[in-house]
Length: 150
Image (cartoon, rainbow, N blue to C red; front, side, top):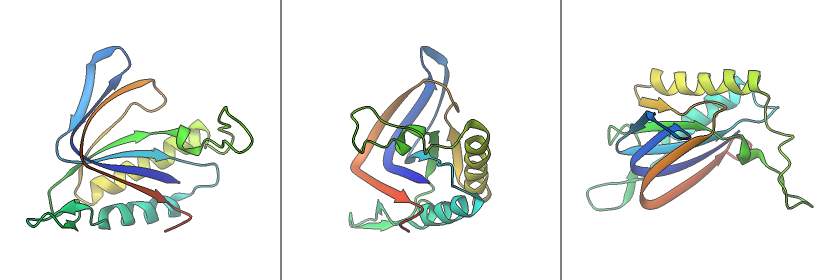
């Protein structure tokens, strides 16, 4: 499981070409979540725990020192199977390691539920849909969390 995390001042997602479907967050994180065939609920729990503990927000001295709870931040969670694309020997990504719809949906929803249970206000993207994402990055600060490496 891979989560690309970016600090944002604002992030909005909508179904492609359907502005009326817009949903978003204010200050917090945009999390792009890639789920692989081999991922389980244990990877979800481990990644959520790490995500909530990340001290990547600046404090009053502009030192990167605060976590999402410390700033009362929000999270926009977007399913992103393309994070599992393998380019070894190819120019066109091979997405063979990405989880199928059933497993990916189950683990994506668990991820969202765990964030909500932790007291984080979240909004979700549109699973399996072509989306438009508008982001005001802050920093920019981008952290890549890989469940195999944390």
